[in-house]
Image (cartoon, rainbow, N blue to C red):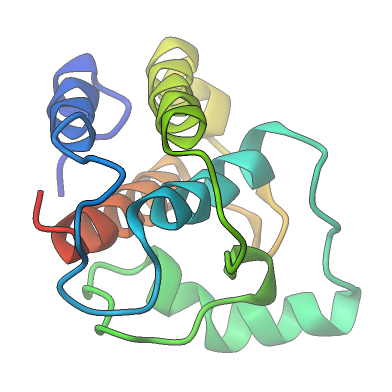
Length: 150
């Protein structure tokens, strides 16, 4: 898997994001393009902003035991898989706003670099390694950009 903390990788992802339009159709699933971008932004909101509530200790244990390997492991996501409630985007979103936010998060991740993420705590899974953050961000982006054919 490519290193999302490298400028070259980020630039490739941004190029793919820039191929999207507000009316780009998905190959599967229920989200439209603006909702998908908002959905992708949630992972970065959880890493950079104090916007989402941390799950209670019991739920974090369950997430670590049963979800972490799916999210932070190399195996690709299945089409139409379940998502956590915080990631469900069902209301209309502004395409340009969500696109700009996502590109900004990608650039911020490169600027901060891997050292920022080494041992950084995830709201859901506790402290993660740089490799786990890389897989989590990269795999999620790859899944949804592929979903929209870019």
